Image (tube, rainbow, N blue to C red; front, side, top):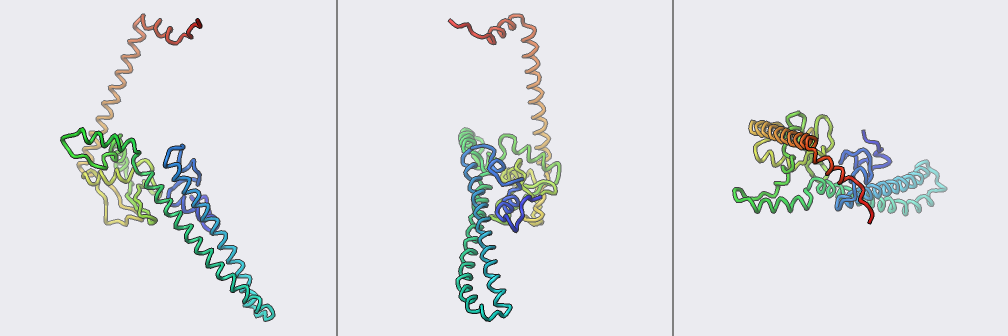
Length: 275
């Protein structure tokens, strides 16, 4: 449910519709002072406020012109000459504020597109890591989208698709791709659209291109290869978790059974004496 009224606050209303956030604030769009996402969020908020301001100017100009037209329309001849003179200035003013509103709307659309591109792009450090990793591999050439399936992103996407209702969509504003889940039409930040595109290219996911990419979005499903990859990914995760559990158990039990470990631990936690 959008908390903003499109008739009174079109800027924040559009931000919520496009990004699927609960409110229009820096905290909602960027959870910390990270650069450059924080700057992009600030530009979105400023552009939304600017559109609201221009919208209010349009409403005021329309109301002034409407009052002038009402008197003339009622046949008040004594005021006709005055009304005509005022209209000659009111109508160009209305055209100016409408043009300003149009520019403010375009700026908000641009800032939203820039924010979404930045939100779905890998961090510079991650890109550098991927480049160095690709240079060290001799068995396959480096791909620019390796980051999209790194760090468990691929497994997260496969599990979500297996649960059902995941759709690949594009925003009508800027054509930016995004992923939605279930009946929600908002972006799911847990799944990068680039991850889905990579998995589709690798034959792990099927994308139903017969559906409209805007609404309802193109439904995603696992291929046979994707189902096998999901089983392997879950099995690997289980083995790693089990191995970590055994290591933790051995370390804890060993420390408790070793009498020499107790004084060492006590010494390391003791407050050093001042000399």
